[in-house]
Length: 120
Image (cartoon, rainbow, N blue to C red; front, side):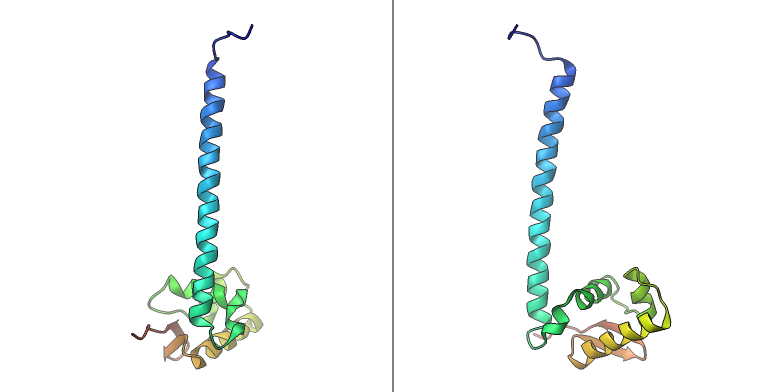
């Protein structure tokens, strides 16, 4: 009884299990990388202001990182999946202005916010 040959489904199950284990390991590595990058970004951008380390500010920074030409507050709301109602847009604009004051962002044109260039 113990000498049966593996059925094709046994081989497929083994291959799928191995692939699932590989993908799980890769996902865990990606989660570790994301945590590390967030920690480094928080330390870089928020050394003198822990408020900027909060999730809403980090989400804004992530959205701006995708657009080197800059974004308006309403576009950032849309990118973050936030309803672009006046109160949300104004709240986002206030956060953006706060980051401009801390030299994390620039506002070279009125209402267009971009990540500040790194200084060497």
